[in-house]
Figure 1 (cartoon, rainbow, N blue to C red):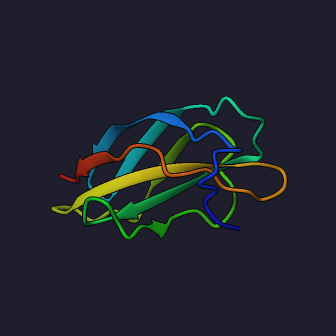
Figure 2 (figure 1 turned 30 degrees about the horizontal axis):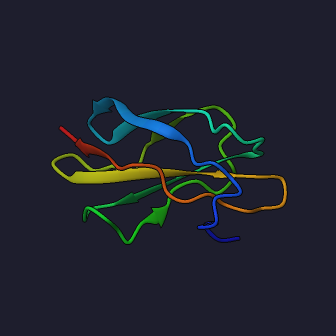
Length: 100
């Protein structure tokens, strides 16, 4: 499974950090315009990556809580959409969080 740069799967859009509490960051995003099986969430501490996959299974709602974020750290998050064939979209725009 890899990110599909050709654009056959539309990425998710409007990724935002909707909550920041100690050891947790809540993300939400707008669904892809393509039929998808779910989403992946990625995190990095350096803007632009490289990114590390956070979820072990596809995310089915358009919301994800990262319970492994550490207090006092800066993180950048992106999501991808995954279709039924396992094709993954390009990364969404980055959302930034500074965990209290």
